[in-house]
Image 1 (cartoon, one colour):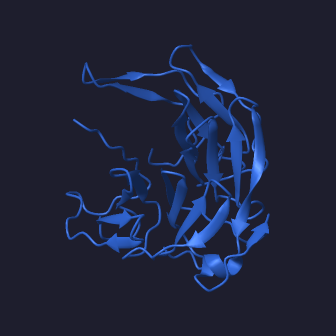
Image 2 (image 1 turned 45 degrees about the horizontal axis):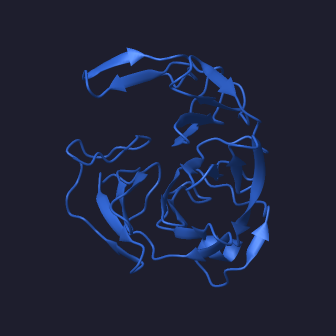
Amino acid sequence: NEDYRALCEVEIYDVFRGAWRTGCPLLQPRRSLSGCVAGGCLFALGGYSGLEPLDSAEFHDPRCPGWFALASMQVARIGAAAVAGAGSELYVLGGSAELFGECYDIRANAWRPLPAPSPELVAGGGGGRLVDNQPGLGLTGAATARIRDQLVLCGGYATNQLPTTRTLLLDLKDLSWRRAAPAPRPLADATLVPNGPSSLLSIGGHNGEGACDMYDLVQDKWTANTTTLNKGERWGHATCVLNF
């Protein structure tokens, strides 16, 4: 909406009927929230109420009417990146300077903190050691996706509020961070979507280009794509892949 109000509104698109319908409203008005699908349910996480940042979370099961409250996150988050794991877990990264990331266990309805990458790793320098709950690493506008047992975290706004090319990988087996090849252009408020078993696409973002680039996890290599979105720059959007 044009005045950036926090909303409870939900719309659902029926692929077979080719039509939109109104869904059950959220329990809490939100904007700049995070969302993902895990275990067949839709999760709405954090955001801004219009008055304050939110640590609250809720989920919707399509088989049941309404939204249901979850245990609150450990910190409030605005503009975080969220992605489902392979099992009964989901991950939220960034959006807060207090705690870099946390993991939600769907079965236990409980959150636990994730280790943060070192400041040197975030800045693109050497190192690679992990620092638990390292302050000052709040990251907004980053995009994330899961490929196999790796979470890819790309872009986001630097401390000077400019988009970055930074790409980091979180190994879900041992929760260790490492630096990956930088994106071919700065990205913030872009989207990442899987593109096959070992690659993903970055689409759009706040960089003035409307670009679509590809990252190969096996080769740790980005390929810049000369094809751009028809409408030019898009940011703060959503993307999914539909396989025919």
